[in-house]
Every structure is written in C-alpha cells, then in structure tokens.
Amino acid sequence: MIRKVLIANRGEIALRIIRACSELGIKSVAVYSDADENSLHVQLADEAICIGPSPSQDSYLKADRILSAAQIANVDAIHPGYGFLSENALFAEQCERCNIKFIGPKSTTIQQMGDKAVARDTVSKFKVPTVPGSDGPVENESEALKCAKEVGFPVIIKAVAGGGGRGMRVAHNAVSFGKEFETAKAEAEKAFGSGLLYIEKFIEAPRHIEFQIMADEHGKIVHLGERDCSVQRRHQKIIEEAPSPFLSPEMRKVMGKAAIKAAQAADYQNAGTVEFLVDKHKNFYFIEMNTRIQVEHGVTEEVTGIDLVKEQLAIANGEKLSFDQRSVKFQRHSIECRICAEDPANNFLPTPGDIDLYYAPGGHGIRVDSHVYSGYTIPPFYDSMISKLISYGRNRQLALSRMERALGEYIVKGKHIRTNIPFCQVIIKDPVFREGNATTRYAEDLLSRTPKELFHPNY
Image 1: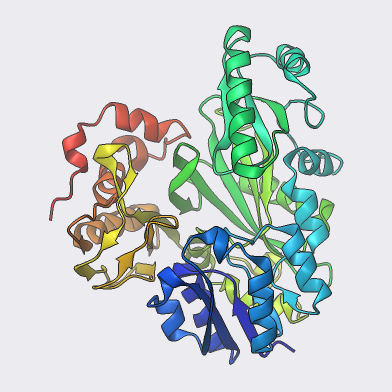
Image 2: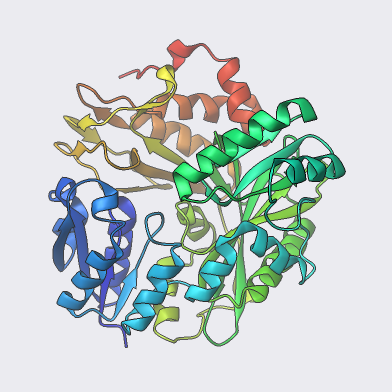
C-alpha cells in the first residue's frame, strides 16, 4: 500500500502530483534545488528535502541524492513526473532494488523503448506500421549514406538516444548528407553521451499524432484517444489538442488499436504515449513511445474526464484500471498552449527573471496548471515554461474561443520577462490553425509570414 510518495521533479508537474496525492490521502515529499527553495511545490508538499545546488545536473538529475532523500523520508514510491530522470532505466532499476515503487513502467521496458531503433523493431513484430529506415544504428557515414539511398531522399538522421529535437537532422540529397550526419552525431554525443545514429525516411509535412495509453499490472491496456501535437518549433511542442481535427472516428479506432499493440509489445505498465507521424494520405507510422506522463496529459483529462495521475498512483498500488475501452468517452474538445518565458521576437530566447505581477485567466472552460506567482523568480537553470493554459468546451469552436479569451486575459509582468503569449495568440487566430490544417511545418511557415512586432507583449 502506497502511503507516501516522493516527487522527483519540480514546477507545475510536481504540484500536479502533490494535488493528486492529497486527494487520495497519500503523503507527499518534495525535493528541491537551491534555486527552488521558495517554489510552490516545496510549500505545498507535506515534507520537503533539499537535494543540491541549482543546476539540474547537481540536483534533479542526481539519482543517488533523490534515493537518499527517499530513504530519509521513508517513502513507499517515487513519481518522476516528466523530464529529468523519468525515462532513465537505471534510476527505475535502482528504485526497484531499494524496494521503492517507481511510478511508471518497469526498468526493462524503459530501456527497451528508450532506444528508438530497438523500439521500432519491437513494435514492428506486432505489425505496428513503422517509418522505412535502417535496421538499427548505422555503423558509419558510408553505411548511413547507402541506407539513405535505398530508403530514398529526403531522410532524417536521428540519435538513437535522442529526444527534444537534438541529434536530429534532415538530408535532402546525397550532397548534403555528410554534413548533416556529422552535425547530428556531434549533437547526439554532446546531449546524450552517445553518437549512435539511425536513418528514417523523412515524411514531409506530416501530422504529429500521439495516443495516450494506460496499462495496469493485470494485463489490461486501454487507450484514451489521441492528441494532435503538430504545432511545433524545432521539434518542441507549442500547442496540443484533443481530439485531432484531422482524424476520423474510423482512423482513431485503427490507430488506437495500433497503440495498444505497441504497448503489448513492450509489456507496458502505467501511463505511456505512443507517437505517430501521419501523412497527408492518412498513412500512419510509429516513431517512438514516451514511457512517462506527458506534459500535455491535461487535454486528455479534460476530454475524457479521467484523472491520469490518480490512475498512475492506483496502478502503482497494484489496483486494476477503473475503466475499460468501452467506457472511455470523448465528451469535449480541449486545447493546450504551453506558456513560456521566452521572447518570440528574439528567436525565442529564454527570459528568466523576477515576475512583478502575475494574473492567470479563469472562468468556465479554462484550466491553468502553473507553479508561478507574483514575486516568483523564473530561474535560468531549467526549461522556461510558466504554465500550461488549457481550454475546453463541447466542441472545437468553443475551445478555440475560450483559449483566445484566456490568452487575452493572461498577465505576466517583470522587468526582464517576455512570454510567448503573443505568439500563441497569433496561432489561435490564424485561419490555417483554426481550420485544422496545421502540420509539423506550420509554426515555421507562420513565423516566416508574420511581422515580428506582433510578438511583442501587448500589456
């Protein structure tokens, strides 16, 4: 029985988990770095333990310090949230060895699905469609070029251990291939400590569609529909929505079954996300599986009415899923904007600093997941996300109008603070997005045709 949980994370996701624990009568333990001493998750948890200096590599990425804190606090389980150690197979294995429940999949599953080449091979054996490409990592540039020619240009060169768009380059022909290969390798070595690369066919202007799955320890796997995450900049998601305006009910059914097959292939437990690329002809291809809760899980919660974090805790406690596939209903439409401290008019440069005035929008159909407040200092050591602004309504048009209204109400003021709120406002009002025609190229195209002065704060 889980009675106390340590949250190995910070910011809004730490608050999200604390609140779920509180509602279930579970005690929570926050860990924090020096920079986060005054953060809300530290104030609202039942206990809080400092684990080191401000840089994440000296605190939130230090597995030994987190495990020491867990033993000091005598917790039953650790929830990793997203980012940091959430997809670190060694950390999950260390939790298992310490008899501390890791709230997520088994360490073997994390390792298997963390290697993109292995993951693709694993799901393909269960007849899940995959993008044509190399059979595992390529040994060198010569082998990679041979594979690229067989697959057909353009191709995308990807880091085996990659994520967040790092170690990823597109080559449109054999002439440019060598340069892109070396760049991807250097980025991969710097970001992940491994220069292993593999080759995939580059699907031009696709949709990025992901399916939320939940799986208990009794073999039951259910999908909770899709999220359309096509609005991205440099492979980083900006806006997500559910359901996708692109998918038909028939296609949702087919892709949902494929997502469940992928989870079965990985012997999956707890929350996970199966990600696909969908071309203009509605052919879909598996690209990866995220073995954790996603940043954008809130839109699925608003559409289905199911609390995903509570389900994670229940599964970790050995309980069966509280729902089956037939009971999952898509009752609303929901849209999420990731609000970040960055300057869209200056190449999205992060803008850490003191927040002098903070006012979050509200009203019917609006949810704000955030850890900031007036007087809070956005530190320079972590990602710059301020909040997840979520709108919902009985249809997409209502969700859009509520999001437009909420973005207009949002106030974040500080001497050095800039936000991407104006950029999100441009997107929400843009006809291409409103008509549901955004692909993964959309954000770059929008930036190229939008005057930079529109991205300056209007308050």
